[in-house]
Image 1 (tube, rainbow, N blue to C red):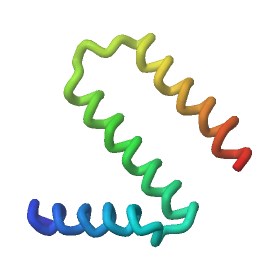
Image 2 (image 1 turned 90 degrees about the horizontal axis):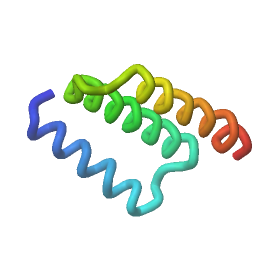
Image 3 (image 1 turned 180 degrees about the horizontal axis):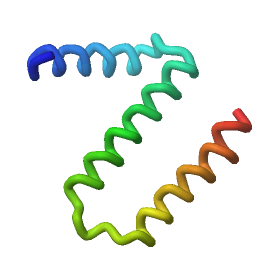
Length: 72
């Protein structure tokens, strides 16, 4: 997939989210995908990330998953 195709796909997804065309399962999947993507980008771009920061980040994700997402 080239940059133009990716840009068009992301624009379509953005429009569908804005128009409420996705159900909660789809929104959850998109949210998880974007969080994973952001995590990978941050880990690759920031060589200054300490092990403690990594543990805090993963712990927060675990807490949110177990206490927020699971209750919905």
